[in-house]
Amino acid sequence: MTIKFLTVLTLAAMPLLAPVAATAMPAVGDMIGTDPDTAKVALELAGCPIDEFEAEDGKIEAKCTDAATGNAMEVYIDPASGNVTQIKDAD
Image: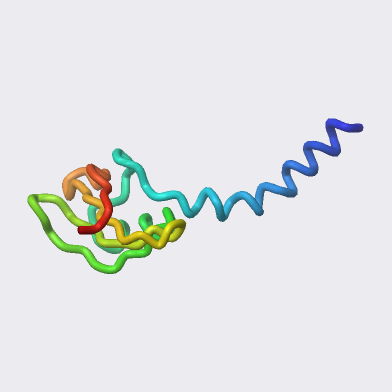
């Protein structure tokens, strides 16, 4: 009886925890996408709404705001693979 109650309680709490997971910044190595539309959606779902994209040193630089902290961030994406190569605070 107790195990069943804990299982139901855990399942009921999962939707409350989902928004927390959705606001984590992407990590180096994460696949974001090779085109701007896909990258924008992936970064926004990861909690980093995009301000703008620009090319920098052969990479795609996505300027965004970390939804959890409000900090301006720069996410660098390899245009061939769509993987995040670097993340840093905006200059």
